[in-house]
Image 1 (spheres, rainbow, N blue to C red):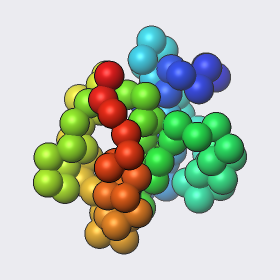
Image 2 (image 1 turned 180 degrees about the vertical axis):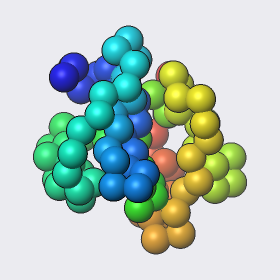
Image 3 (image 1 turned 90 degrees about the horizontal axis):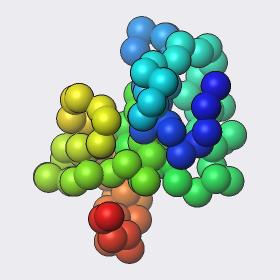
Length: 97
């Protein structure tokens, strides 16, 4: 598909999994987001922020309240309540580039 560094957001909408990339547009895939999350976990740059979204921390642009902005992705992602505490702890330790 592409290099991990090219992936900005992985989303599932209506059981359709879409991988958004910097240079290759979108890539359609299949499978549950939980499986993708387990595959990506060892890489260390992907983070689950909502039941339907995994983001790349390398492309994190800003966090405002419960909205996350990702570079090269044209929508804001709402931070899910279930993922909020863990993400807040994580985001305190990162710096934006």
